[in-house]
Length: 539
Image (cartoon, rainbow, N blue to C red; front, side, top):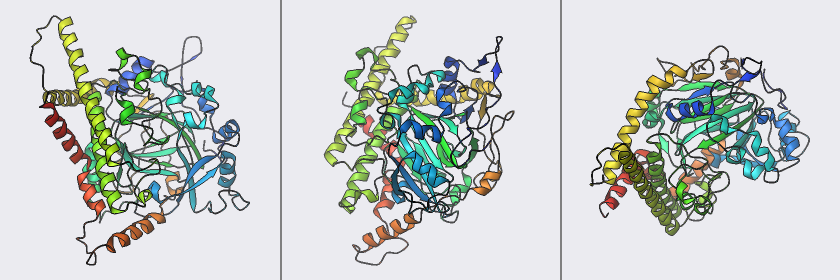
């Protein structure tokens, strides 16, 4: 059941299992759900896991009453069909209440108010990355209405969650998250997800401009790709699914995703599940991160966590085997990226950082501060390695096995962790988890085996009616494209050209071109490994 412009009617819930006494039974225990999340290497949808969550009634209309006139920032994008991604730096922004948003969304924009300059037929609005801790700062009781503990994370609730409210066409450009995995609860309306596996990174043309820590963007508009400019994208394996109310999508680590609203009003709640370590505060210092970031909520400062717990995941921790090593290494990579991007882009244009800095970043940071971040990340990595050795040693002794006096080097530790993670992925993903798929756990499969990345052939997974595959709405949705993006790019090009002694040519290399090479995720991974290996020689 589709929602109206006010967002009434959350949709028809999937069929639920009933116990002996007539009560509804969830298909997975928290322990089993976490086991699946820890081992599953492909996106999947959990059904019938949140039917008793109070937050299932959080329609936009309900939230407008709860928030009682609170001002929220909406990102405004154009409904166009451009082949250029609409990055956040090219959007307009409006501060408004949810009530004003709902009024505008019902085509009453001609009245007055903050949306008066935005024709509803030409624009979409998106209140994205709204952390509960900021949105409900004076209503913390609502945190308990989101119960991620049902997925095996005790104590995790709305305090570690993010709210997303959008109109038809609102979307997030294709990107991957550097840390952890993602759980997304669809509350109202439907969203279509386009996902690509981590191995397809070369086909997605990654870029770090606009810069945002923990996010790697794609240069491609994946719903309207320019295949002449990006021919390798045809090799990408698109996985597409429509997420309906009452379902929870699991997005594994480093899976690329583009998300779009395909109903008049959509409401989603998500939580990023990641490893927290002893040096988390140093790496994620709030002085350089706004509240709208993927790594801030739920992060306990070192002094707030017991000493014996510093080597274990915190509220947002993910206990995937081999995953801890990956997240610590990823923080080193992100620190390297930040240092290079800030240095080169600030030197190019020191007076206009907002042109390349994503709105989710508070400000550009100095070279001195970035050096501190890098050193903190490296220290955290070595700290993790040391604690991993202690755990391994204790396990060997407890099992009565012979413990060799020669400790493995950091390089050997990295190689063993990586090899173990890969073998664990293949063994568990294909054998154990596959047996769990069914009506209540539906895998997200490739959209097409023959021509996976063309605009047509977008399919959704389905199992006994659990996953909605309604294709009619794909025709209704006019994919939003920001004309400002091309305008901003032209202005930037003119600015750089004015400093060059000769006119630009097709072979002209810009700062962004250089950064695309220097901070390519594959390059920063290599640099991080070389840096760590070099430092390990001093131990």
